[in-house]
Image (cartoon, rainbow, N blue to C red; front, side):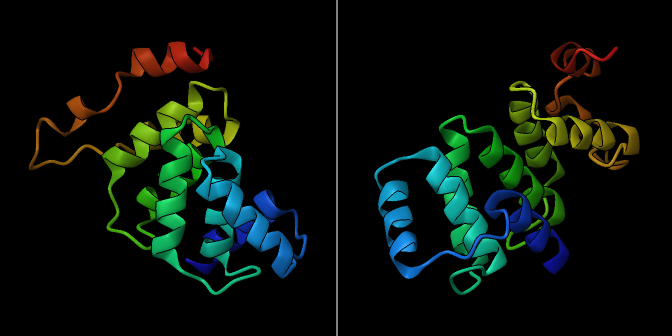
Length: 147
């Protein structure tokens, strides 16, 4: 879990220390609806960089960012769903958000979405309809333009 938090923090915060004044400005921007700031604030809460770690707040800020169409927010929300970090793991929700980020050519989202298909991890033996809740492989192929 901590590895995922650290990886997201490194990618999104570039290791930069956030001053208290910058954090306040970031919170103001995120609260005003800036999707990039919402995503960055989510990363801070996820990793505990510049603030105390709070997985619920991280999830909430990533959700706000993702719902506005921010590819990084969609990817980070998908990661939380896939890994079950701070919330119950949900492969179908992870695939949904990876798909949305992949539609915007987010390379890591494309890789993770394809990995979900390769593993078949969303397909449950006791639930024959589980795969029907995912985008079809044909849609994924067209979306990512690799097949």
